[in-house]
View (spheres, chains in turn orange, purple):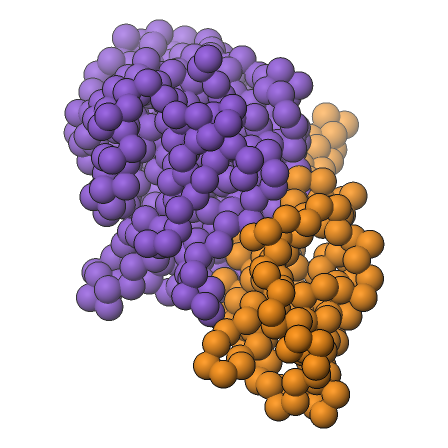
Length: 176
Length: 396
């Protein structure tokens, strides 16, 4: 009887240890991570739409930089597709940064900069990026944005010369 | 009035320091900081952040310097103060990754004599020495003429270990009041280092998550500072979980430290060692948890103390490497076991718990030879380091 009890105990402990190992090893699977939503915007200079302006989007994920660009259309509009990569979970943090620039007459204009650790897929960022009105003569502003309830310590901040179609996520605006 | 940073300010600074590794497309460095920090500190990044070499020979050859620290000048409420925020581990770069592996997970640790003449982890010392020249270049103009302001040193993970060395160095170099804030930082040095920096650093807020494995390494004889004082346990948990090391994950130090008052956070006053005797018959209670990692260390120290061998072992630790240290420890244990049946029982109990902790539940203990004891050490230490190492492996 005693022997059976001991074997059962040993088995239980082995299983407990295995589940501990699963915590450690069970996350080798890759998952999808959105680095940028679809970006829609318009480039203006003193209120006039600018055609053929080069828009560059650089997304830095750790040491990798994903870069793409597009020229604005006749109405000054541009759009960039959603960018998704596959990554493994890690216990170490990776810096993620979104930067969008417009180039006009040899000068770089910051349309967008935001960053966070591990993911930038936040509602506030995505909402603003979905409708940007970028007047190149506007000064660069810093925006404090609504935080995600699940990540209360992650302060979401963006800098940009643009205004946005839906500014509801903006809680504070000041010169950068 | 002497100030401290709030937990929220310290954690957002540790977080923001991750973004200074590389300049933006416009060639500029930016720090996105919430109003509590940007209204109280100015960060002049026009000449870039403080750079360091975190890799080995290869990165030196390639001259791959990366941003490591930023220095901010206090204003308003923090007028006269200075903040130094140091970036944590960065894993993607091949040569950096090697370095980090050596630093955080190398069980065959090497020791070096640090700036304050005590024995510390050789890897941390190396990285710190590489950032020190740039650090003093930035701090000299701020602190040479200002001995009054407080210097706040902040960091997560490896950044925490570097912030610890920075704080101690700033104290000796400039004499200012220094405060240290670390999140998930590993142990930096042996007992003398822990004791010395407990005295030199005016306020030390060491924050951990119970299940984060990084603050558990390197193992004893490395000791946490502040010595025999409180630590801040921002999240409870028993099972060791590598994800809980993350700054911005779940729970994420940035979330668990999101408070404006240190009093609101749980403090756990833990003396660095408590007398513990483990009985062999009770060994199945052990599990792969923080609690047992600490209890096993305490039991080991208790045996050495009882047998009058602790001082000799601690002295030996300051000279050797991990390899020779564990050999020596195993031989010493064999001798202790032979000296008295009571000691043999204690050692059997300790080894039994170590094996169950490491998942070797079916191994029974029949002999107490140095060779067998050494093997148990390897198995136990290996289990803990594997938890950390495995996490890194999947980044390759």
